[in-house]
Image (cartoon, rainbow, N blue to C red; front, side, top):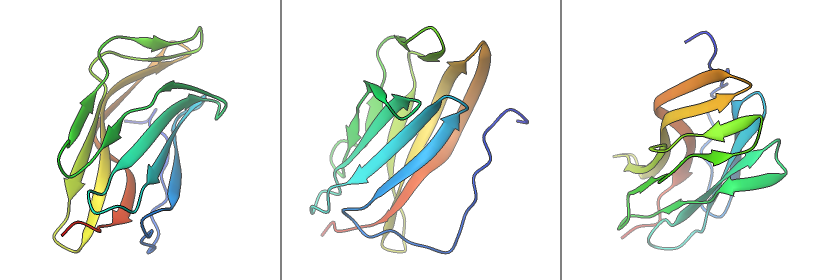
Length: 125
């Protein structure tokens, strides 16, 4: 657990159409962008140092899970096969985008289970 990046949680709820950048390892980020549509479509760009996207899944109310089929990355960061993004509706009119799986950065494995990448206001009916 000590090698996981620190996340500061504040009392802010993001409206749909906004984006959240989350550091996932020292050299990688996840950029989550809510579309604002009634399906809560949310795209996530897994990027090396915020410059190059290596995996760009999306989740919605109808397609709640996206799973990386095979390892991808470069000589520094590898997003491992099985890395999963999940749409998770909450009872409060919000939804979370969750991350589970492994990312290797500089030889160190960062493992996630239900890690919250972003929280958005739900527009689903």
